Length: 115
Length: 113
Image 1 (cartoon, each protein chain N blue to C red):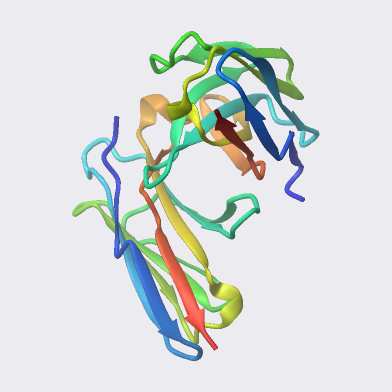
Image 2: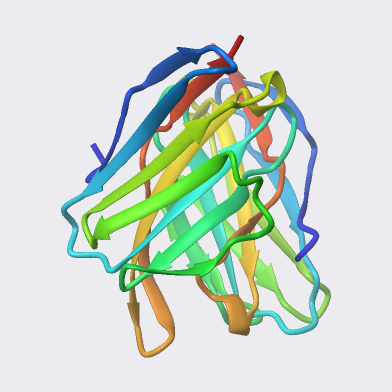
């Protein structure tokens, strides 16, 4: 256990479904991230929340909607996804202080399959 | 966006052999280079964070070097063991986006008993 917990571990959803991925950390970190890994591609940053405010979007489609209600929890709301959105979604957290980051820590991911 | 490349993509070695692989990154505006070890169905585990040119870090049988002028880092594993089998990822950041790690596609290492 790294201290970053993601649920569920696996998710199969239809293209018309709405689902949410959850990430939780109790490391005292103040920044949280969503990454996506598609087959044979590098990990790609989707969203960053620093001090609970979103600071980077990276042109992710609007069918992915992040939510960060507090510094310990991060959600990724999914709706009307496409089969090509099937991937591993990783959450990470870090501590940001004076513009520098410390202790970048990953969860073990949610394997998403869109059918 | 930073273009980070890793080679080889995959590698099979015999138990007891030493091995190494490469991470290449843009040398301009460099900030930090990260190495992670990622076993299947687990979280990527941080190995090293390196920032200084010529830096060398070691953790047990694993070590890494950094050349920021030419934009590469090597990861070495001495006397590979089956439990070293994993994907090894490197990631680079630049100062303005220090929270954003740009990853390579990884080197998948398999150690054959």
